Amino acid sequence: MNAASGDRATPQSEQYRDGQFHNVVTPKQPSGRQLLSLWWQFMFKDTRLTVPPAPLQLVPLTRAQLDQAPDGSIYRLGHSTVLLKLQGKYWMTDPVFSERASPVQWAGPKRFQPTPIALAELPPLAAVILSHDHFDHLDRETVIALADKAELFVTPLGVGDHLVRWGIAAAKVRQLDWWQSTQVGGINFTATPAQHFSGRSLFAKNPTLWASWVIDTGSERIYFSGDTGYFAGFAEIGRRHGPFDVTLLEAGAYDKQWEGVHMLPEQVIQAHQDLQGKWLMPIHNATFDLAFHSWDEPLEKLLALSAAHDVRLTMPRIGEPARLNDLQPAKPWWRAAGTRNEVAGSTQAASGEAPRDILASPR
Image 1: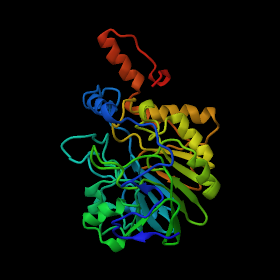
Image 2 (image 1 turned 135 degrees about the vertical axis):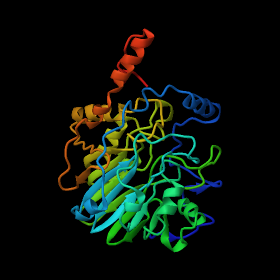
Image 3 (image 1 turned 180 degrees about the vertical axis):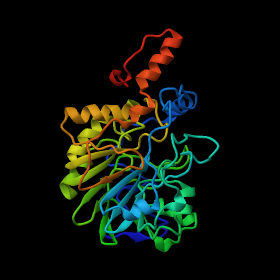
Image 4 (image 1 turned 90 degrees about the horizontal axis):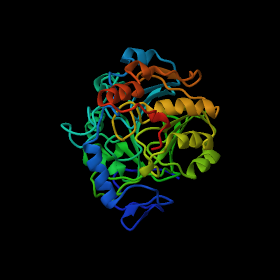
């Protein structure tokens, strides 16, 4: 099936009924009083473990370096923002360049470190690929800044309507339902299912669709998860579109209380295997404080789990080039900023508490 262009007043989708979009299976996530309680806890939590004690290592990136890079280069720019150089053109997922993942820039989760390249220095983009409309994935100021730099914006149903309202020309927006495909610059993009939710206000009820993406150049296949809980759809995507050269899977901002919409590390490993991935590159971490786990827990857990399950894991530093045909095994570069156990030890020593191993603690 093909994509629709521009504004869609009434979404035509099997996922859309009763005025909102739905998952195939209703996921486990907080609601009502529990949600309000979690917001309160999050606003007043101790951030000594959830924010790095020092800036994380990043690799500064320039336009000249990008132009000289070979085809098949991948760059994590922070959180779920990934820059890909494929077929001689540039493509970007979920661009967020603002200082905070928030509706306002005077409050909300603040970046651990700046992006490795400025918006103004980015090359022209053949397309921006968006997964859903949450603030840490759909950044209004970044989208507006990319309006002239990006040739096209490819989105799930309804997400493109935000862009049109913000002044992006409708002709530059393609909106897809799950399993629909569109071709751009010789690359095939397929919107695939995810298990999540949407809305840009506390009481919004899934007004737009969420999706993961299959990026198929004909010689390489890349999977981009967006945000999702673990679900049976991964195996179906793997059967239809796998194997994948690399899976870009969300791994961060998780908790047992909302594992239906954000995978736990063990589930990330299983999802990668379901997708028939060759290499796993975790995203959605090392940028914003969006949960109660320590800032480096996702990285440490995946390092251990990948070894235990014989999964090839690659975790380049923010801004560091990765090559699809020469991906490198993960090294714990983040430890240079100080580990959570070091911070916990110093904090508990000052308070007289016994240290504990956060990695081994149930969450």
